[in-house]
Length: 236
Image (cartoon, rainbow, N blue to C red):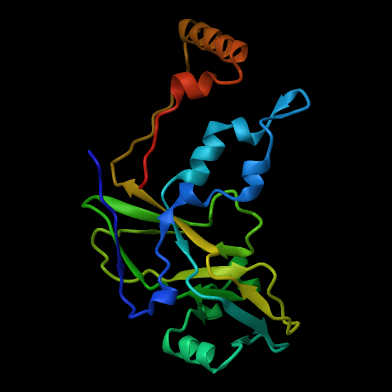
């Protein structure tokens, strides 16, 4: 059964600012595409199906406008615009805010300046589905690190703004641009099921079976997981 996720735009954006969330699989970066499948006598992440699956799962919220920010030496963050038109857009549709430090006292985040991306989207999922908001997976080149959250998006019909840390932002008054089109956050629909952990010790028969399986995997190391274990996921 195909589930439907709905992205409702709640800002009266002009067409130039309309940039909807996309399936994450459509935003695979160039650096990954350029990685060869083999390096010397070893496989690379290009052949690691779980690595690729993680980068392709769910949907990605994309920054809809160039954001220019700088931090004063007193720690305050300011936005910068190039002309009066951009100033009007920033003031009419503020793309970011500062997240109050008083909300994270004593946490590892308290030493960072936390910003908040003001998402123009309400995301609706079917009953019993929540959304996991997390940093774009394996995208360490992006200096945007959202704080992870799990939202019951089937009952919470409101914008989910995204607090994040800009890893290059410091009180040095240097201007940093978050370009339009930058992946901000990856969202993954998760069905709410009841879970219970069980812990067992495999008997000798099961251990032998597992040993034989490991040998089969070693004999077909290139594609065993892809051909025998992988289940296709689909996000359109």
